[in-house]
Amino acid sequence: MENQIKKLKPMEFVTSFKELLLDENTHNIMVRGYFNEDKLFLTFACLSDLKKLNEGIIVIGNTTVPHERELLQRGIGKNIPKLNLSDTFNINGLTVNFTQWKRNRDFPFGFDKDFVIFHPVESALVGKDFPKFCSTLKNAQAKKNILITTNDFRDTPEKLYPHVDETLILDTTDINDENKQAYKTIRNNLEADHKPLPY
Image 1 (spheres, rainbow, N blue to C red):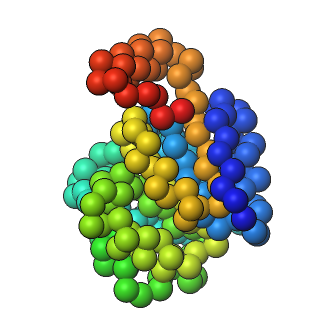
Image 2: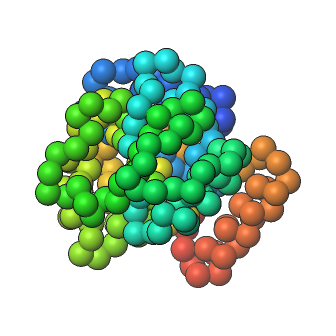
């Protein structure tokens, strides 16, 4: 199946993302967008809304567990207990546990899970880590694999397009003044470096 790429406002994103989550032919979904918290919030909100998807794994990238906890708390807007890779947590009504992507590059995992969320992914997309990361993605056997980018200001995530079924770009540029200002800064910084916006 050829990867479809859609740039969507929040309500359109929710509709499309839920459809993909319920579509049995869609396995790997990438969520892009300039605003990290917005992507996390809506991804978890959609998963929580769907009663069919309750249990999952969050696969963290080249980051520390406390840093991932901080990112999730900011995105979901709820306090998350101190994370431990061996524990199971209830986050937004979902039962999740955590693992690091490098632990899963040689063996299949997640057979009994409804979803696997890869977050963050961008540091694994550069250099010698990329083929290893692709092996981990291939090993993820949950019903749905969801890849959420962070610091999505370049075209680096496009390397993953051949490995995903669908890519949704969440456009929350206009939802508040803070995002409008941040978008302007992103655009100006890229223009100063003579680089185009990725989308």
